[in-house]
Length: 122
Image (cartoon, rainbow, N blue to C red):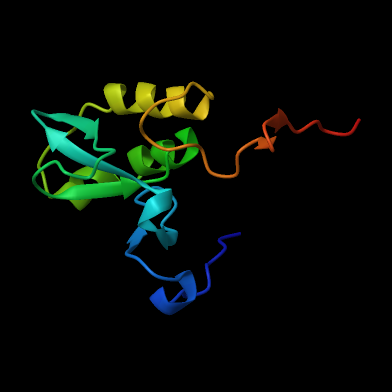
């Protein structure tokens, strides 16, 4: 069953720019998303958001990246023809999601509280 999200206004999300993830199509604050740009046929993360040109926004999670690839959302969002190399972006997102510290963004809904791992109940 397809679940549609309720429309979200910018006023409900709070101050700051609102962007749409090209993978899950959720509208969230730009602080939660990673900007991605096209450089020489490859997708490159732009954590500082300073690279020139058009950018696409995606959650720094492997699931959202997979959805964006399946939907062929990056060429459409970046307005480029043909296929784009996603390998570098995928490895960077997997590294971020795997818990290795980088300069990009921490994963959404982290698994730690107050510096200690959250344990699941048996």
